Image (cartoon, rainbow, N blue to C red; front, side, top):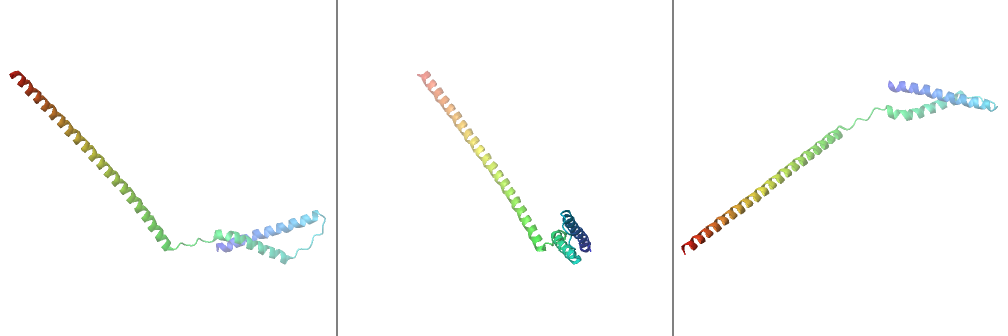
Length: 145
């Protein structure tokens, strides 16, 4: 129904365009002083039909309903979207796991450094105590002599 309505309007528009074209041609011929040739009504109708065909060829693709997509294509698109989302989720999870592992390694390194420093401090304290004992023993030995 819409298509018939559109064709009716296109027909009127084409008739107006062809009529305007022939009127301008007649006016131009009269302005130049040339005799106006008789216009064959069948030629006018042929020109209108040609103009209708050209106009319909231009506008019909825009009026045609869109072709429905294949449901399998829609399903595949959704699968691809799901796969993409899953890959993004896995990437984020892997990144978070990497950051956690990196933090654990950093913490283990810091604990090892602290343990090593503590052992070094203990060894230094023992050395200081041993030096003190040796000095005290030497001082007592010098007093008894």
